[in-house]
Amino acid sequence: MDRLKAGRFSFVSAGFTRLSPMNTFVLSCAVFALSLVTLATASPVTTSASAAIANSTSPSITPRSGILSALYGDLVLYTQYSSATYQLICPRPVGRTLIYQFPPLGTQGFIARDDARMEIVVAFRGTADLKDILTDVEFDLRPFVSPGIMEGSLVHHGFLDAYNNVAQDVVRYVTQQLVAHPGYRVILTGHSLGGAIAAIAAPSLKPVLGTVTVKLYTFGQPRVGDVNFVRSVETILGQENIFRAVHTMDGVPTMVPTIFGYAHFASEYWQHEEPIPLQPPENTVRKCTGGEDLTCSAQFPSGGINAFHLFYFGQLMSLNPTLCF
Image 1 (tube, one colour):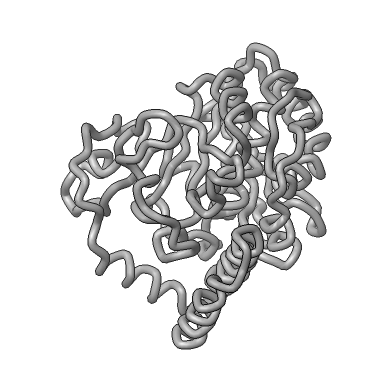
Image 2 (cartoon, one colour; image 1 turned 60 degrees about the vertical axis):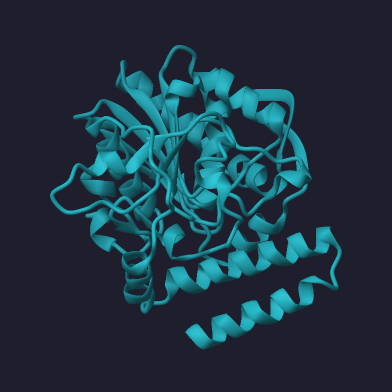
């Protein structure tokens, strides 16, 4: 498997010099998406990804500070929700109440309710099949038009369509839950492609919900839209409600390049090194400045899909069925 993957990437790299920049990017997206499906569904990834992370050298960056332990706990929790979306059935997402699981032929994910924390969680799945690959590579920018919002910014065509396919269901079930459970807040979350869909869902849903608190937690999320979209997300949600987590040198967040008009929104929470046993894990994460902080993950050229993308806050993404029971 490793030799095959190495050969495939060597072949692609050798051919880049004969492609136009746009065709190179399309091919990169296709390779990225195909690799994600291969790695996410193959059992040997458990050993290889963990070993690569354990043996890796962390970036030589001294963090300005850690984060609060409560926030670190939130990142762990919503990583678990995001990982649970990869399971075919999830009757008890992270032990919570399942409200709705999206139908199997479209955008995947679920809506859950946590009565102890008084929140409704909408979680979207990352790339796992051919349909998702086609979504990933449909990267042309389109006007941001979705139930609840219509404005002048531009977003990734595939990500927008993926959310709009389930937007009416999201609005219906979330509003029903909020009527039945006043005072609850709403969480949008997802890993990789799922994080990109959540990033479109959150600013679309917030205007519909009015004063309800809406928070966005994404993990390994690629860039989603242009600078105007970035400003809209930050304005509609408030930067204090945005948590875009990146694991060390994960190559997916920078996979969609800025030269095609894309940008990241704030705030990035960069886990710059692996936790050390008996040391506070929250000290391994720093809050970055703005959306494209060159002292955080943006300093590294994209390596596409890699071991860092598959492992977030203690979860080997997609491979833990116990999260659903």
